[in-house]
Image (cartoon, rainbow, N blue to C red; front, top):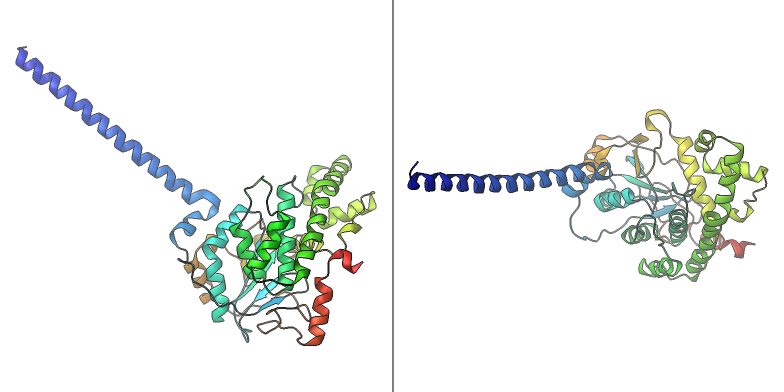
Length: 351
C-alpha cells in the first residue's frame, strides 16, 4: 500500500471514530432524556398529569362560602349548589404526593366550587400519625392548625399556605411560630387561633413523641404486627386505654378529631373504593385515578357526573364565611358567634 493510500485509510478510520463518538454522545443524551421522561411519568403516580396539564399562573379565585362540618371537615360550595357532583379530598399536609395534587389540581377544585359546577369537600387526615417523629408531629401539627383556621372560615386559604410550606419528609417543620404567622397571612386576626395552635401543638408533640411510641411498643408485645396493622388508630388508642395508656389528654382536641377522621375514612369506603392512602379523591363516592392530577381530567369527570351528596353535617354556628350558604349552611347572628367561640376555645380553656 502506498503512503498516500495509507494516509487515506488512516483519515477514513479517524473520521469513522469521530462519527462513532458523535453517535455515542447523541445516544447518551437521548437515553438520559428518556429516563427523565420515565421518571416524570411514574413519580407520584400522576406527575405527568401535573407537568403537562395544570392551571397556569396565580389567578386569584373568589372563593365561595366555606362550611365547617361537625367532623372537622370543610365544604366549599357556591350558595344554592345542591344538585351538583361532590368531590371529596383526603389529604395529609405532610404527604409529598398531596402537595403534588394540590399544585396540579387545587386551583381547578376552587374554580369548580366557585362556579357552582361541583361541591368540594376537604377532609384532612393524618396517615403518618403513628410514624416516628418528626413526620408524625408535622402531620398532626399541620392538620390541627388547619382545623383551627377552619374556625375562622379560612381553611382553604390556610390549606394552600401549608402545602406551599410543606416540610421535607423526615425533617422538622410546621413550627408553631410559622403556623401562627401563616394564619395572619391567610387573613386570620382572632387571637383564639394562635392560642389554639399553641395548645394543639403541645398535644401533637405529646402524642407523637411520648404516647404513640409507648403504645406501639406495648402493642407489639401483645399482638402480631398484622393485627396492629389492621387496626384503625382509634381502635389502637382504645386498646391502649384498656392496657394502661391513658389517652384522656386527647379529649376535645383537634388532634383527636384528625385521628378520628383518619379512622372514619377506612370505614366509609371498602372494596374497590377502599381508602389506600393520600391523596385520595372521590367523586360522588367513586375513587378517582390519575385523572385527578389533571385540571381538565377533573373537569371532564365532573361534567360527566350526576348530583352527589355531602356525607356530613354542618357545625351549627360555624364562623367566618362558612355559614353563609352553599350545600350546607349554619346559623348566623349572636347564637352563631357564641357557639363558635366555644368551638374555637383551646383544650385548656375548655377545662
